Length: 326
Image 1 (cartoon, rainbow, N blue to C red):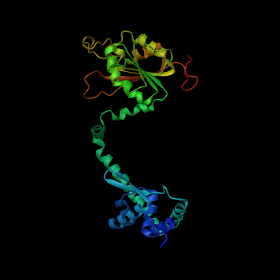
Image 2: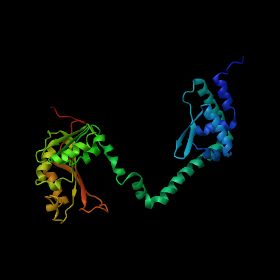
Image 3: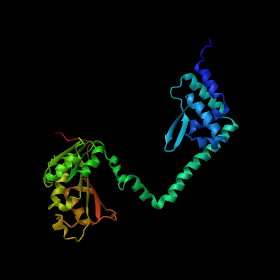
Image 4: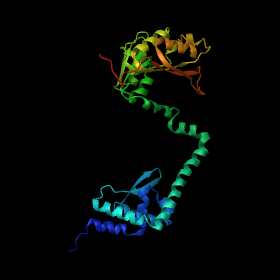
């Protein structure tokens, strides 16, 4: 009865072929498709595919699908010490030959062609790129990831939260969101929207006297809220009180406009805010590092132009994520 061959003899048999050894040296450097291997090795597809199947069956190569392409790479996972030593020796011997040097030069050409195809696409699609991306991922897709810049340990106040749209966008990225609004109907809608976000707490109250403790928040937002407030100065002072020293405030609201009908139709108290006016309000409330930036107006938008403002509450935390004593 014939004895079973040790695994090392199977590996020696697989790697003894010069073409398969060349392929493994290449696949140790880069993931490659069959057509790319054909270009580097200067061999027909049938020959390359046959050798790849042998290497796949022996476990020396793995593959993954990417769209309509399949990429192959060297795999040493699960290989014992003997097989790894064999591969190290083979790579040293095969990789130091004139043939391997030619393969390496052609490999660089193949990788450059990949990059050039990508560049050609972007050069040809530059004028249509925004439209293409919007069609594929939605108009605001690039904005949805920006809250990941926030500190994950923060507590953020969504002041004048309405139906909870901002709170829902922030909740996955921070420790806690406190959503505050005076309207019971708005808060009912917010609860429905935020039911899958256990780190969001909804509180009912006026922003002139918000249900927030001193220094409770790391950051706060007032998103299209301030023009509805009869006393913005009081709201900004109360917001500063609820923020920790060094806490951040973000405001989005309307630039000055002359649409007087908004007072009756939409309950607006203020017809927007000018830079000098808002800077004065924020400074008086105890904010510094004030920055006000007009926002680009969307072509389909029917309302006045908007601005974004950022400001910092005076004072510096004694250390990161400092918490006040309860």
